[in-house]
Image (cartoon, rainbow, N blue to C red; front, side, top):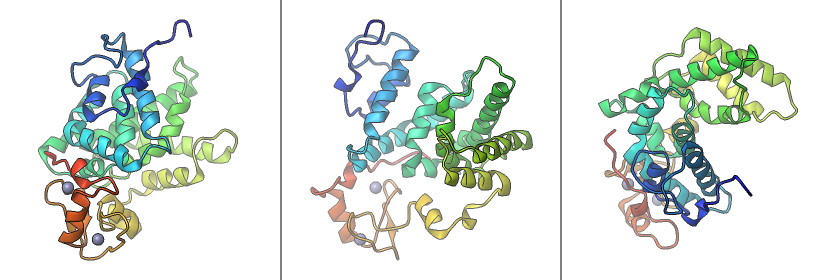
Length: 280
Ligand SMILES: [Zn+2]
Ligand SMILES: [Zn+2]
């Protein structure tokens, strides 16, 4: 198509953690075509295509999680600082990568961490809530900023981040909280073309209203967030007396035997490919 980007971003697929760092500008590097990046829009489009590919139902989940785990282990603290300091309230690169890696254990570990490397993360829930509330207000005033459909779809993802705000996170100001709650209430009444599921609306409303602590969440949710729900060896469903991997602290096993098997397993994705220690 004339005027569209001619580069085939998927020629470099799946991207490595380093490729992801390059596309959002954390590292120097060329685009998949071998040429220098044209502009921000080109980078954003490349990232969008990669993420869509990684999250596609045909793409193996363990591989996708391994790529995002490695990225999170190496770059999460940098991405958060860049997001916080950005003048653009939702910078495409940083925001989309944050939303994409929210399911890997490194992400919840970072949000819970008391290490100083993770200190900026304590502002994350508050800043996203404030920026989101701001976008909602501007939209209401029929300002030039339209409320992107993406924002709505991303509310679901945001619940993962907000969920942590009550634990070690800075509180969300009442004003921002109420703006988002009003918005959620209004969405609840709509059924057509509403990308938010009732469950998301319910969960987000609860989180914003009640300020729940992790301990109050159902046990299986809490355990999942702590990454300690079940032995990491696929097929083993033992969930008691689990011991955490000392290197990455992101996975646990019922016994040293299962840890050994999973480390170099050939049948499934071996843990050695996703075991990345972090500073946080
Ligand atoms: Zn096991
Ligand atoms: Zn490990």
